[in-house]
Structures are given as structure tokens and as C-alpha cells.
Image (tube, rainbow, N blue to C red; front, side, top):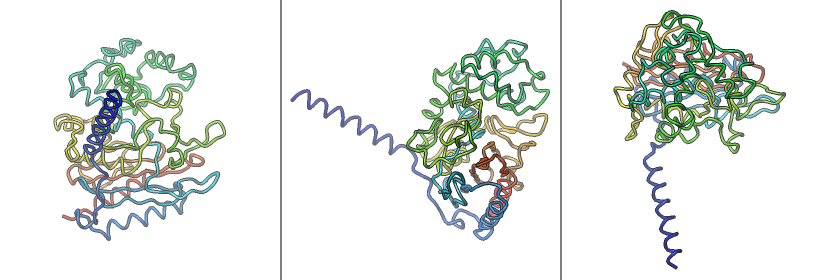
Length: 390
């Protein structure tokens, strides 16, 4: 009997701890009438028309749009189809998308900033301080900030052949790459640079970028459907992309290099829903905090989102601001807005000046890789920013 009482007590303790953890996580963001959070509702409704036009022009199979201010949502809406081939499926607001390069700021750069906040890393640390092999072939001067702003002089993407012998050999090949330029001389949007940052998260913390981001960002914010390598039971809600080996990719990362690295990489591999991303966006609008949950200090947030001049325009740490990659940015957003896009057809823009965030998620590469949505995402962002009442 004593053993039974002990086991029952232990189970109750575990249940209570789990309940407290669930209660501490922020709930889903409340949906408010647009006018109640400062939007001109008829102006915001123009989004429906531009999305329907894009669907008519076959720019994508479908999409989910979420727009909010501060800690409330004004719109969460699904359009079109989640899948076209081999059979048709309607898009739903809880569809899970391959975020592609949104992985860079949301998972990798956020994790790097938390390591900096905790004193494990500095922006001016040479990468080779934490990964000595990286110094090979003249890369000893490249530091963390260079990689976060794509000014390290690294190639955009190295050869697929560099990944075909497994992750260990792939990392050795990356460490041996020659830079294209000296740091700060040239802006080259580099997947390689963020692969390296993901590697540093693991070297420093002992956790993969997937584990670190989940533990320190996603779980605290209650982002229960945001992760790398989503669980098989979620597959039916995942938007498919293109074909790989004759089958549509669904539940595996689209990016070939991230796929060959096992599905977890600093530049791609993250999956999420619009409502989960809204929690992250709201926390970033509110300078690192959502409700009682703080994912980074305001000092860290300020450093991460501060504009930096780069050879092609302005970037923040891990974020785009105004460069040649900003066609998915709302034209009338403030100079403080930061955001990013993803190859599969995703975009997230956050404007802390007005409290606005705009989430656009599509699988524009389904079924044949020919979709095009960056101008559409930018138009939606412009409408949203213009709809904010003085």
C-alpha cells in the first residue's frame, strides 16, 4: 500500500506541474473586431479582393492571412486550396506550413540573441572562436553579426554535392569554404551563413537549434504546433510543396540542403501555423514579451531590431528591413518595420511603431514550383498599414 500511495502521489505531482505549465503559457491571441483595435474595417476588407485575384491568376493554390495589432488579431482567414494534386483539399486556418527562410529570424536568430543575452556569445565574436574549423581558407575575421546581416562574405549556397555524404562531411565542407569577399564589403543573402549560426547554437548550448528554440521560445509562448520535423499525426494538415523522388513533399522540409542535414538547419526546416506565428509576432511587437511571458529582454530586443546599414540597404539582426529582398514588405509600414520571407511562399512583417503584424502563409511552390507571391504579400501589408486609423 505504501508503494501505491507513493506512486499515486508522484503522478499527482507530475499532473499538477503539467497543468501549471499549461496555464503559464499564453493562450491563443483573441480575435477582435478590426475597428476595436484601430483598423478601418472596409479598408482591411480589400485584402479579400487582392487575394482572390491572385488565386485567379494561379499565383498559389491558397493561403492563410493573419493580421493583428499588439496582442490581438483582426483577421485569420484561409483562401483557396491547401492541395491541388493528386486530389484537391480546401485551405484551413490551422494548416501547417513549411516556413522555409522564416526559420532564419524566428528560430535561429532568436536563439543566437538569447545566447548573447545569457553571456554565452558576443556579436563581435569570431565564428571560429566557437567552431575552430571554420577559420579555414581565410574566414577567421567573420563574426556573428556579419552572419546575422549577411555581410560575412560567404557564398549564398554551396553545392548540393557537399551534402551527399552525410551531415558530418557536410559540416566539414562548409568549414572549408572560401569566402567571396572580406566582411562588410558585400551583402550576399546567404543560406550558408545561417546554417553556420544554427551549428553555433548547437556547439554552444549542446542543443540543436530545433531543441533550443522549442525550449526557450516556442514552448514558453504556447506555440504548440511550431517545430522542425513535425509529428506524423499532423501530416494531413501540412500544406504540400513540390515533388521529391516522385512524391509530393508533405511534412518534410522542402529545402534540399536542410533535408540532407536531417531536416534541422539554421536556414530552413521550421513548420508552423498562422495562429502560432501570431503569438511570436505579438511578442516581438511588444518588445520581447507576450502577457506574462518574456522571451527576451527589452535590451536584447532593441539590439536585434535596430536598423543597420548594409551595402544593399538596411537589415536588422536576422531580419530584413529595406533591401532588394523587401518586395513582401508593406510599402507604407514605418522605417522601424522588420520582417522576412520564405521561398515556399511565406512572409512575416512586424511594425513596432504601429503595433502591426502581418502574416502571409502559402505553399506557392505546389504543385510545380511556378507560383509567385512576394508582391501579393507586400500588397497585403500595404493595405494593412494603410488601414490603421490615425
